[in-house]
Length: 317
Image (tube, rainbow, N blue to C red; front, side, top):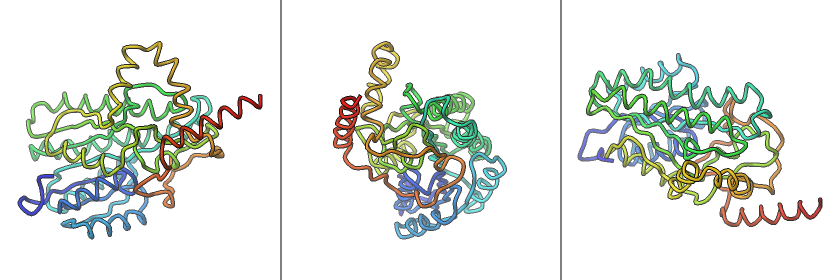
């Protein structure tokens, strides 16, 4: 980041700051000596992140527990952020939840809960952040999407729908704010990332999800997000195979559809770890699952175990 000892510390608001990409982004902004506004649903983990950010060099920290799906909460959050220095320089929306399962198997409240956080939450944030940036005539809003917002995968319909919507929202905001040269809306799409979101997910598929390879660290994704803030461009793919998947989905849809099911089964699930059906952290925060990393091990080893498990199950039939 350009802020630090030689520049005015920026006010950086990070949603989803309790875990994964959001937590890593907060750490990176703290190391640049910025003011941090840390937002997530649950306060106790945010307090831990606050301590980490202060130790990393943050100019100041402010913990704001808020539910992105609640417009009143988001309005309050933005007001409190403006109270730090009177301005809001960078907002990174990394908050998000996942649910696994066939479309018809995901309960209505869980399906709606994913859309509430990922889509309505993004809209709520834009509703209150964009007017601030326009008044200032400067500032950046980063919407963290996913490669899944460009393709289709089985048994993740709520998340897929939500991330396609986030991508559409980013484009809408970009079009609507072209009249402010120094107001930037950035869409950033990671691929597989080593975060707890897979284990924290609502799950009605029978086994735990996992990030497909190649798997990036949340720290790497955070660094790339903040580089985008320093050198703005409207959209960026943050996974080295993202464009390959996008080309396959759009250019060779028949081949993509044939391959995506089997590949998803062995590369994006852990067939060795059964899980009972449940809503995970979709409807409410689960503080014990909030961590920087997912720690699911080497993805290639995981794929090997999955292949063995699938082969054994077929022999038993």
